[in-house]
Amino acid sequence: MMVQIPTNVTLLRQILVSFIRNEVEKVGVHRVVVGLSGGVDSGLSAMLAAEALGPRNVMGIMMPYKSSNPESLAHAELVVRKSSIESLTVDITPQIDAYFERFPDADQKRRGNKMARERMTILYDHSARWNALVLGTSNKTELLLGYGTLYGDMASAINPLGDLYKTQIWALAEAVGVPEVIVQKQPSADLWAGQTDEGELGFSYREVDKLLYLMVDERYSRPELVTAGFPEKFIDEVTLRIMNSQFKRRLPVIAKVSQRTIDRDFRYARDWGK
Amino acid sequence: MTFKVAIAQINPRLGDLQSNLALYEEKIHRGVKEKADLLLFPELSLTGYFLRDMVPNVALKLSAPEIKELKKLSREVSFVAGLVEESSDYRFYNAAVYFEDGEIRHVHRKVYLPTYGMFDEQRYFARGDRVRAFDSKFGRIAVLICEDLWHPSTVYLAALDGAAAILCPSASPLRGITDQQVQDDNARYWELINRAYAETFSLFVIYGNRVGFEDGVGFWGGSELLDPAGRRIAKAKYYDEDFVIGEVNLEVVRRKRTMAPLLRDEDLDLTINELMRIRERPFQTRKDQGFKSSKVQKFKGSRVRGKKGKERLRQRRISLGLKQAKGRKKR
Image (cartoon, rainbow over all chains, first blue to last red; front, side, top):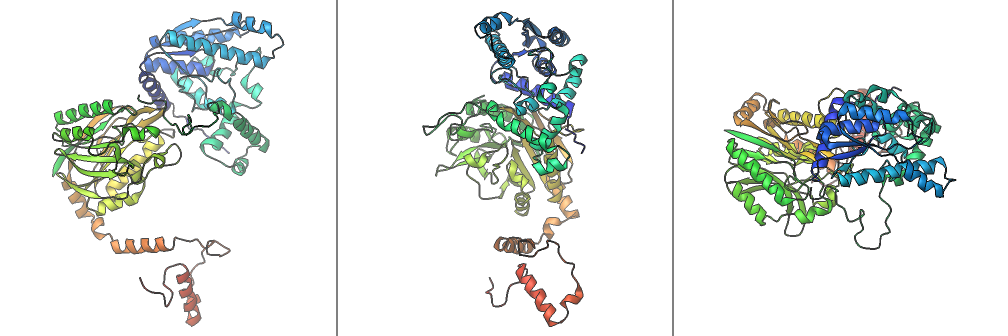
């Protein structure tokens, strides 16, 4: 079955630029900081923000670790040059190494998560220093699959990309002018040498996006997905991933004891009064 | 009768009555300056849309000072305001209030409160229980709010109640991306029904939507004024604030209804009778009635020949509710 995820780049661009401008300015600030990994998501986020707020109001922060692929930093700098945004490089090696000296047997996953959270604290620190919001870069595919670090790269104040599948990100990035080498390359979290998202996940973004689109957006049932040609094992694996990562998409669970509990019967929009 | 209608496509602040009141004032002055006779504000634009627990905090009794302020403003131009109305029995309504010459002429309480998907209205609002056209100084009009228009019965009632124009304040979120379209899919659908209503019921449709974002949900704007021939008299920008003006000429309604007197020919009794029947005995499929197959058999003339056949047909019609059984009291 041919599955076409609609990707009207002109309309998406218009909506997302307007979203960034609106949601940033109503808070009473006019700037954002964004972590630039050298990948397509953060590149796109930064360029949309530059269009919405003006490049001088966007700061791309590059936070390499000593084992990061040098290509990542070079690609992030390409985005900075192309979009004329402000930039800053903070090497996270000293603090990461200092920490793991005490816990030398930590595996790759722990180290990767720690780095992601270290970067988050730097972004939030600079958002305070620069009177800016932290701009998110997580896309819908990785949010649904739980392929991100909670309170790490998943943390942000506003996220223009959270409702876009990776397939849509690529198309929009191309339209917005993210350098081609970034759009074309294999996505990678670059937490260790040779890591690729698709290698780690065990399937390609294009394949899983089709499945997610039908499952989530179009509400296809399991039998319908099988009829549409998806292997049962694949459907079940992805379903389980979504269910098991639900905690990453919610606030921490609060034990209810009062009449009015935050987020259960104390319900207000975040844009309260704004 | 000819009058100028303006639509204020604004971006109100969520839960901030005072700032939105100032915004109203600004737009009303602009309407006066641009010689508008009637000004339409979007749904809940005095309060913001995703209010949730803020509803009781921004609700206004019709005796509230803010309402007095609005009455005063209506001496200069008539307008429809979108706000939360608090009744004397402490219910909160998603309401549209029509102000004219310093007075409230009409209040419409939203009947259809969406409570599905991203919407939660029935959790916070009481449901309106009437659809009425009313006489304004511009002729007979009706106000229906957003989702009300997704139920054709409301427009049907308003048209039969004599409305020559429907004013529809709306807070419609953008959603659904389709290739090759300049607007999102929800906007496309709205434009389709607005136009269909205008033509079907030979009346003006004045649709006022808001813009801006609330917690990431954007409103698509695109407010419009359509005449009974489905022509766009005015159209506001998508996704951005705007202020548009268009002329409503009720002669166009007369002309359209003369050429195609559809409302004159509307068979009210038939509609009422059928609705009564449907309410009494909701439509049942053949499966519901215990038939194995859901296929409807082709009617064969020979089957009803003779007494037995006629009796069988009669029984079938009774079972379908098309005919009353013998001996049953007539209502």
